[in-house]
Length: 339
Ligand SMILES: NC(=O)C1=CN([C@@H]2O[C@H](COP(=O)(O)OP(=O)(O)OC[C@H]3O[C@@H](n4cnc5c(N)ncnc54)[C@H](OP(=O)(O)O)[C@@H]3O)[C@@H](O)[C@H]2O)C=CC1
Ligand SMILES: O=C(CO)COP(=O)(O)O
Image (cartoon, rainbow, N blue to C red; front, side, top):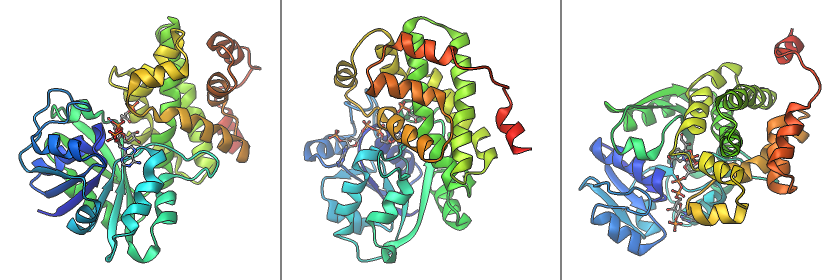
């Protein structure tokens, strides 16, 4: 049994707390809203996980200082855009080294930082034992039903990844380890772009051929960028790559797919975001990935088409025309360029 602190009580922070509490750990979940802490201490979090009874030993608080002091394992489960703010607030209370685990899937626009890089920028090195990323095909809604789920814990330091593997692993939540932090972070963040695009084509009524095309060519462009940034190519065939791409592009639980679907049916971004009420990471990540593709000079046509829909106001029909009207290619051009 270990002491663990989880920061962020949305769907994923609550679902991971459920797993940790069930595994018998002494778990404290921090939320920035006191009324939500009270609800969780009465064993529900209905805004984020409807009709789920949370374990009795899942304790929540709105006291950040108490949560930082509670343990030396910090699981950060807030959206990418809140990572810096939450880290800056945690920093104020630090007086010992901690193992930071992040479970968020995004890249910061403009700075183009991955989340582990943002954490290392916000938290002084003296307080960081290591940074582990936990990622993979894992919708919160299914985890709390205890349906079999597999994820990857990635860290250059295998011992740190194994500590996180041991913390989370149980008979319905299976954790693998990986040392490729860049590949795991890039795969987890960029699959949301493809899920938005698939949602759009589903909303337009295009069906399964278009879905398979976007998923396959989407994985090719994610891997192309990731490898240029230093990732191991094989990581993209793993849980945090193709695994998470499959689940996010095909599951009704995916917020990114649902947001894309509404866009495909003609709603505006503002209408979509208001209706969702939960984070849709793929929108900001599309901007960041588009900027990364320019910076690294990597062609990413699906990302570019979605960027034009989201930020340049072209129609979804025109985006599809742009993608289908591109010049002829060899499917294996990346491999050919490597040889
Ligand atoms: N949901 C899932 O199945 C999975 C999600 N993820 C990733 O986990 C991350 C979190 O997602 P998820 O839990 O789903 O998101 P949700 O939208 O469900 O919840 C976000 C939570 O973060 C809180 N929050 C937002 N901003 C701040 C802030 N500045 N300070 C403190 N708390 C804040 C929100 O509080 P409030 O309620 O007040 O808005 C809410 O509790 C994302 O990067 C996502 O991609 C990864 C795997 C699975
Ligand atoms: O990352 C996820 C599942 O692995 C969650 O995806 P959404 O944010 O699209 O719901």
